[in-house]
Image (cartoon, rainbow, N blue to C red; front, side, top):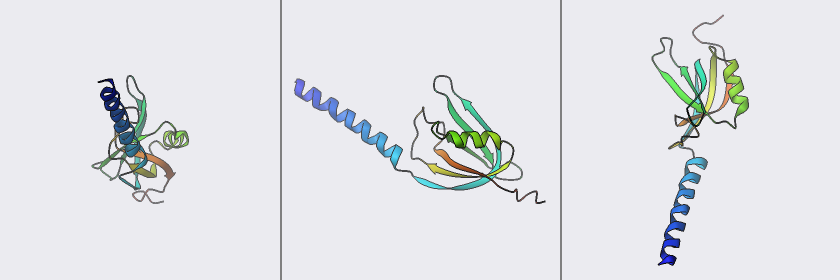
Length: 121
């Protein structure tokens, strides 16, 4: 009986590790989006995550919500500095997320300051 219990427990652990590795290492999609950075904030009660929003239209009708992993400190610093400006972000979309990663499935990996097409100088 102990042999079957140990085998079952080992199978559950292996399934969890496989699921975690699949979610972490295999992105669903990746791409680039541009818009005005509306907000970037660190939120949460137990686990604090970096969350942000970007407006992709002149009226703010299309909002792109995203998360940033804590390991990407340079990206977080750039986003905080670019608040309210027009930016281009590179992102990775995951199939699922974990509570300690963020609220969304979109994770920003790079950010660049861009000229706004709405207000050309």
